[in-house]
Length: 346
Image (tube, rainbow, N blue to C red):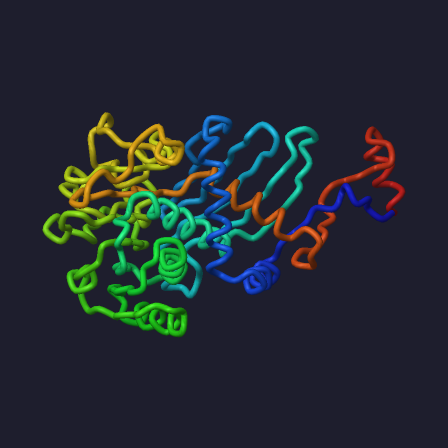
């Protein structure tokens, strides 16, 4: 028995995701995902929200990130295993699912390892468009792993930077990032120290993977007027910035209940004031207020961003061949006769 069309779920494999990205263009796709995220952040109050659900182990963490707007439900499965790099594996892998709330049926299944890199970059640059100095031309990219090129191209496309200064404790990672960015319209400056990397930068992005309390930026490294895009600290016990930087900064977050557990602000008192980005995007709160202010986006990633990315992909693959129909739902002629369907299949 052949499954009916309603029982076939569009599945976007890694191969098809890469085909789709090349079809649209990396920067264009990041910009379009950012627009969807902004749209969804502006209706923030319509979403069910919960901190992600983690399963920690000595090796890393596996998490589920669910949300719903009452019409569609989405979740992402994602891991974080910093030790994987030394074993030739990805630190982060992910897949995601979108479903119809009315029927409960899945409407999309997709890889999200590459898509997460795109949506993380989209979120960073979207927030940067609200908080970074408008005259910013240079970004320091500290941590040159799997996310770095996406971040650089996102800030080029959406915030107008033309120069990136790269630093990583692993010189091979910096060389990889610099090579990948050649011909992409950016001046690329490999640096030997983090101090060298931040010289002249109006935007500082930190994206390191070690699961520990780290001090990637010390207080004396951060001068007035910069925007810090801190995306590496994303679970309990994992931070990148010296606490004194936080005390000098105006801090912006996605979802405080999650960020206080996982973000840089886990180092601060539980009542330390922060501003939610959805409030800035809707005009209910202010972003950057003067040229000397230090703005800090304490980004840990939130389920609504993944929901936005999933909705974007669902639309993007319509009337294309960038997916394959997946037979993953039982569909008996009589919905009460599941056993009969099984027997007839013999």
